[in-house]
Length: 493
Image (spheres, rainbow, N blue to C red):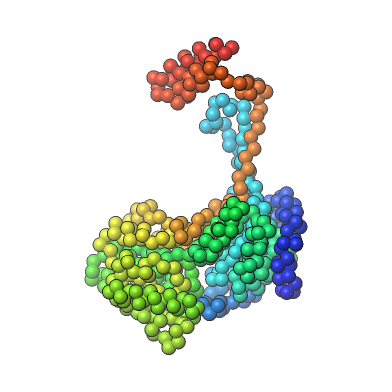
């Protein structure tokens, strides 16, 4: 079964015309009919949640260790909630909007306008290895609901997840031509883009994002880039220290630290030395309990470089995760304190349980150091809510979490995306659904006068200048503009 499906996916070039035709028919299908398939899918997912979770590998490329329970709570349940969100909200989000008369330029008084949301066409989704069901799954469902056909290129080792969800959708009534699972190789994505796609969604590394964008530039194909992070945590005076420490431990442990939103940098902003010292002591004890996780050889090499750099620059290595295990294919938690802005660990993307703590004199210093990091995916702020909200408005970042970490981003109502090297565009939420479409405006002229088509001359200068002054001048100039308009009108008549 899967071999046949893979063959279908590899043959996208040959199937291109059929997929395009299927997409056009799908776009003409009512949104209610599309959502009916999604409703059946949600019920199917709920009844087979464990079986679906078991298709997600517990080990991925030697860089991830999780349980079936982890997969259920971090991927299957959020995917089901995403279905329900679309069932409830998609009609309102995607419906045509009548612009109305308010604010319409006076010279367009006979024109009525509305904005429709049109699907892009064929959407290519490049899946990630760390959350192979949730991320690509939600993107696929949003693209389909919006009226697109989808090409899903899963990450190597996660093909079973994509094929399983596709099979469920087909059983729920989806035309098989509307969802093609490509081969997991890089070449399959390259070939798909060459064959012609209309929109691309990538979840991956910065380097992968650059490579994809270089190819998309040739055809000016639009894209959303959900890239990596080196995420910051601000700890303010008055923060609940126990909660903060527990949250950091969870964020570093969750999914084997193979999460783009995992905390990597902690700023103790304006905190008294004795409180900061106590915080670091508690954090050390919390992180010491994190079990070692398997890492790729490339990640191990990078982690060794980051720890060596921190030592060379005088930082304190309170926990050396790579040195605490016999085999250097795994790592327990690494904790670096007394950090300075120059440390490599303060600006490097890495999927490993490493955390760097810097004591900042005040918020301004913490903000300046944070701004120097090129990644801007998420930020967590722990402290009094009013102060945290004030700080949130000053941070260049895609997502801010106050007194929490990672978990709230699974809310299907919330758009997710980054800035800087963390990418651009959004997925999920209303904004993510709209991103799967492009606006199409329709304007209707209901007046029959042809005067606007007549050629202009010197006599029109006074007319248009008077109109501008009457509509937009100061109170005193509006009367002047009206008189100019009246005189010009008499001459033209």
